[in-house]
Image (cartoon, rainbow, N blue to C red; front, top):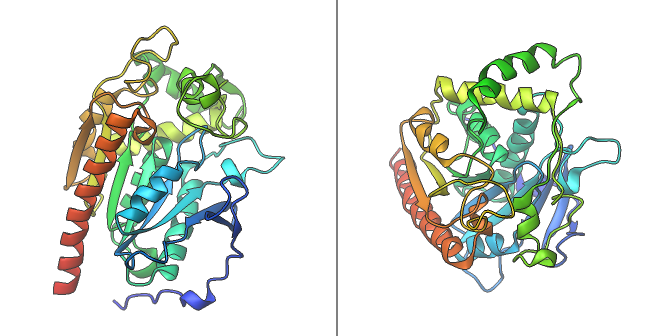
Amino acid sequence: MPVPPLPDPQQVELGWQTDHLLGEPFQEAPLGPATLVRYPHPDDAPAPHAAVIHVHGYNDYFFQEHLARAFAAAGYAFYALDLRAAGRSLQPDQIPHFVMDLREQATDIAAAARTVRALEPGLPLVLHAHSTGGLTGALWAHAHRNAVGADAGPDVLVLDSPFLDLWASEFHRGVGTRLLDTVGRLAATAVVKDSPSRYAEHLLAANGGRWEFDTTLKRPEGLPSRVGWFVAVRRGQARVAAGLEIACPVLLARSDSSGPDALDNPLLDAQDTVLDVDQMAALVPSLGHDVTELVVPGAVHDLTLSASGPREAYLDGMLQWTNSRLGAVVGARDAT
């Protein structure tokens, strides 16, 4: 069948403006209900050999300037996506991060992929997705595994601590999920859980951490999870458990251990205190036929926000793997 043509880059008019959160050189533009952010490729650098889109997780948005610079230094055209009802895309009448179906967010990823492919014609596309964004990104890559042209899935998928399963008791994972699934449509916005995020609190520079971020968009006090969102996530996780067939190479990166999200945890800054890394490891075979695992000792939930040692280990290992797999992808494409 014929390959659908990509849009003309000259016709992709997004209305770029200086990013109101990060400032120059970052730029932002609305993309439907979402927001696309870009780090313009340095003028004195060689032309990029690939493009990357970063997708954030729950109670999160794009603020990791160092991630953009690391990708740019490695030869990537860098973009980030703030999903609908999150970060730069959050509207006053919206419940932060609330969706009833992860396919809503997958639509945002698809729009970003089409747009970036038009802006960076001919470049292979990497999706770098964290936590809940990693779950949605994996489902999108699976759904688009046979698509071509502008609607194709990524050429390479990088999952940074993806939210592939629920870290909870067997009761909450089983009976509790079925109960909420039953009543979800009747009480979609009811709160399931509302507790502080000691993880986010500890990261914040004002609390002695390493990072500056907008605490209205990434809340140290935590962001309540609601029935409709919880059910949407559990349905997505059920699809992962049943087995995906992601066609492109996948990197699943995670910390080497998990621990309690508590201020008295001595390893709060050296463990994943949000998700269970053993669950991630167990689900590696459920993603596709070509999945590599990268374990980063001493890393926190968002590997890019870890202390300098594990952070650099993640960036170096991830970029080395990504570059090698892109080379194989491009080689196979040229051979055909």
